[in-house]
Length: 420
Ligand code: UD1
Image (cartoon, rainbow, N blue to C red; front, side, top):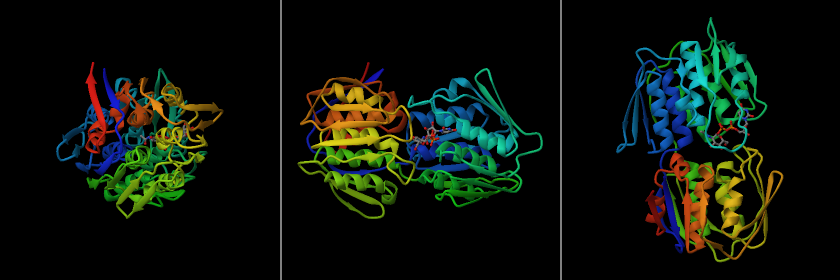
């Protein structure tokens, strides 16, 4: 298993170009199942999760041509589309459950293993299933599989989500594209990745309106065509490198970012004391000597993203004063606290909050990535910790950052990947 050795690195300085968003591209790939013709997806980042989604689409009978150099994927429809998504693939990645909506829409039946993925809480799928049921599917669970089917085809319905779940909004939106009549999803998630998926579906001939607001209307169509689509930039990777600039007292210009997508992060970085300049598609972050404590609460978009919580915690761990981070999106997303504390931080968990007493500095030691973003946070911590930080279980990081060390090294970080 590989690990990263991160040395204390001094200020990170330079420019970095952000690649396509993992959390968008996986859904775009799943949506390709709906098309009757080939779909081309551009700006596909080279990630483990993308490889898993390719395996899954191939297991369903689709053909996938992945040109890694051109960062492009072509998905060719299956001659015979299989409606069963196997455990071996689904358990590797939670987002693979997103094939259920498209399969149900296209085949009228889908059988998908219960999902796995990052261990950050219970992460149920009840909202996805309630949505499918509202559209007229009969849902049964057994032997670790979920089956949804409809004899006569899905029918549009009004669906209110108890929580604006990203995955449920996407799965229901895809299922509804070919349902009879209109589907209205209320209290829908508003994340930029939802808008990207809706745009792709519309390019395929779907009729989706209101994505990016809390009410999405989908008017069903008979069939969907192929389309060509460029994935939006990854706002969480951008946020990670923005934090890296502030943390190392560096000066990083992030290119190919939609600055409105990272507004909550920009706002908190300013509160901490970092100096920010931004345009529509770039952000420059400069660190300052003394960073200030701030409180923050993670929320669905446009609130502060839970996926940037761990990285920001590292920053607050070395800021002056006491900060409180409250996590409201996932119930068990503080597993990185024990690891950051092993590096000398002073963080206590109180219910859904982490109370962070800023310390003067961190020390390198052996730590392990407990999930994807936690792993990135530990790499950031290593950049400012005395000595060497050994980050283990970095397969988590590789799921969502295309070679994090290459990006950071280009900015002056000292990182070595060791294949054990
Ligand atoms: C997606 C992102 C993930 C991000 C999260 C929140 C992908 C591949 N992953 O995950 O990186 O952290 O959005 O921004 O896009 N919930 C239910 N019932 C459901 C579904 C969700 O109770 O049926 C709960 C979850 O347990 C969690 C909360 O809703 O507490 C948010 O989950 P959700 O928005 O669905 O996140 P994901 O789509 O899994």
